[in-house]
Structures are given as C-alpha cells and as structure tokens.
Length: 178
Image 1 (cartoon, rainbow, N blue to C red):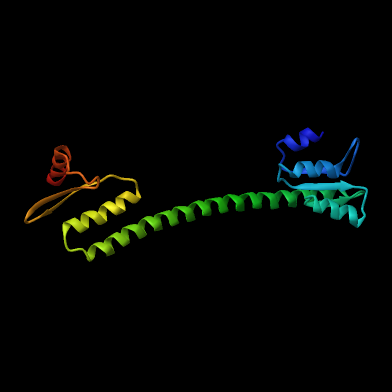
Image 2: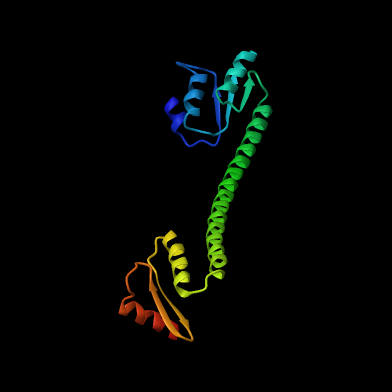
C-alpha cells in the first residue's frame, strides 16, 4: 500500500481518497515528500473542501465518482503528456544552466586574459611584465618560470622569488628552439 506508493517507480499515480485502513490524503501527503509524479485523486467525495484539500496536498487533478472511463483515459493521457513536457523542460533547464555556468567560467577566464593583456601594454620592462604574469598565474595556483628573449639576450624569471634553476633554464631554451 503506502510503501509501494511512496517507493515505487511510477509515471503517474491514480489514488482513491477512501482507502481501507488509511486516508488517501495521508498517502498523498507522504508521497509528495519524496516524489514528483502526477497524481490523480479519485473520490465519491465531491465537496469543494475535499477537492481543495487534495490540490493543497499536491494532487494534479481530482475526479469525482462516478465518471465515464473515457474521461479517466483522457485525463491520464493529458497528465502524462504534461509530465513528459515538464521532464523535458527540466532537463533543458539543467542543460542551459550548465551552459551558462560554462560560459560564465569561460567569460571570467577570458576577462582575466584580457585584463592581463591590457595591463601589459603599459609595462616597459621585463621585470614588470614577469611580475604581472606571476600574479595571473598565482590566481590559478601555478608556480611559473618564464624567459623573455630580446636582441639583448634572454631574461629568466621565476615566481618563487628564487633564481631560476639550471634545469628550468635549459627547458625554456629548448622550448624556444622548437
């Protein structure tokens, strides 16, 4: 009964208000704490208060007995369509959310790169350029070594404030040759 309703894998639930041993409204209330599939309430109780209570507890529709079987089929078909559309929209929303997050992340990365480029136009020596590069790389948690080559020779810098190691110097020279 209740366990199957709450824990089962349902696409749609048709729930009678007057169940033996338990109130259908109690089942609906328990069901809505963990599940979000369409629920169609059936009942011989057709008072407005009963219908409103069902909707307040999360019923998607309420059908008063007696009813025509065609009406039940039509309601089930329509509720299934709407639920499928909601699931598709939810998935699209999640996809869009992911794309927006990715775009914002990319935008932030691009913004950092553009700020670095703008900032470096005002720099007039390799020391200042190296320090600007180290600040950007530190934002990514990177320790950096760099070589600037000019007609006066190569200038080597390391972000760890120590002199660049011979191995780092050799690697940077090899990279330049390739």
